[in-house]
Image (cartoon, rainbow, N blue to C red):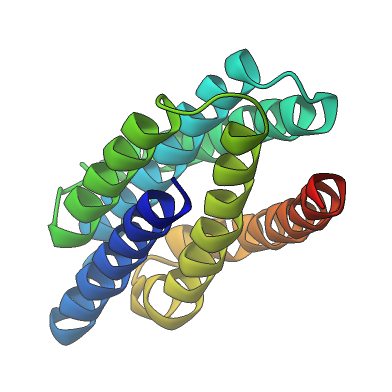
Length: 179
């Protein structure tokens, strides 16, 4: 099971980094950045909804609910900004890779229960937030042309950092309970 999860996690992270690298070559435009932001948030919302309904561990359930709440909030802000700017999110290699990776992660998580589910979900959240922060810092913020879009990314960044730290804390707690 662990090998399957690591393969899926590696595929998601590879897709994100390859997609972002491809976008770096051509520098994503604001419409592509909007699609990447919306997709990245939706992927985490979907995983959070699954985890909130499946886990029996209170800390994991609360974290999953927080992921749904916070990422939904960022998506609402992104949608409002896109509407204000008359900007239609444009699907691209990175957004498609994120969606595919998210779908693969959900399919894998649905095969797990109990402690295996919790560990796989939290491990993925750590890796996912690390990859998203890397993309925000190295590609999305530097490439955003519209100052309002750039400001939204900068404003959302601390939330992603807090999520990563929270996920790392949960990961540590789960590994101590599992040993």
